[in-house]
Image (cartoon, rainbow, N blue to C red):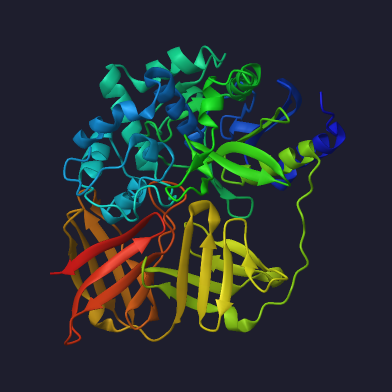
Length: 519
């Protein structure tokens, strides 16, 4: 048994309630299949004063994805068995459909369906049913990058897996998971509870923070395959104990899930079968995080060191940050604190990639860091000795007014060009997306411009449009059915030779290049 510094783990564990303030939480660290540190604090329900315990059921959110893939591999042996069945769920798809493995690895090129609910006019707190999911997915005709060439997170990939598994077996995914995965692993109370409006056992998830206060989160969406599993800490401990007990079985289910995948160009992919591959100080880690409104979950597993970490919150603090601290303490690897180097103010501003038609915004942040907006959430970046800006997932190199963007985990590179200018208000009007049968409505309201999405799920609220160039605008979207929401949508006006707007291209990291024509 490789020794760990238990005092370091215990010190982090004791600090969690103070660091990640909120209603309640549970955390555990396992070494060689045994729990060596754990912590439970707070309340599962503040109003009813129900204490949090290791038996408290909570949504594990997107950590569900590895279990969906586990069921698929356990039932069918190989993902390719279901390749031909995908046509039923993408009936109008143009070109070659992705393979089932592409769905499992988030390399399908399909746009995220929770982002598509936004452009379909969904109320963030509205009801989303299995029929809505089928209808939304059936609208998809195109991809936003060539299948197998990049990674982009897409919950819809795993919703499609659940539909395929259930249709092929004639059984519910909940039944299959309990019979084939949960019970063999000793997860006695875990189950798929797709209706997020109620948590088994009555546990309450909370939005807010210690400054604004905490209020019960509202979820009315049906998750199946992409999320939906609820489990206790005891269940999650049993899962990691099962993983450790089967570690030498090359055909064991977790070993199959955790195999390294690649992109088409042969470069290693950092996501596969519902697991993210990462590195802490040279130690290889697999795991996944999860987020629903009011809930956060994170699990990590260091196979060679036989160390696992699980953190679950019934509030929206960073379970990832807490789990990383615990894993680093267990591995004895401190997070390197780089020297804060000054950032040339010439970096700041807005940039645009004419290929993906996505934008990048850079602004100064406290402590000498740079606040970058590109994907779903802002990233804090530091200036490196190499003259580039670095975050955990992105490197930016600047040459004058051009920034070379590199997101290695996604196999994504782009040349972003500085843009500026006052937006032209002739963008006002109604635009239609044929693929999604949805509209985008833009109006001038006094001195400002506002816009909203409309579709089969309803009419979304008007939101302000902010110009970053004459024909490039940002539409903030910080609230959607899923948590987190898509972030900023980049809205690009397309003009004919005479200068008249003919349409828009709208996109975000989760759903790029959606074409609208002016009505």
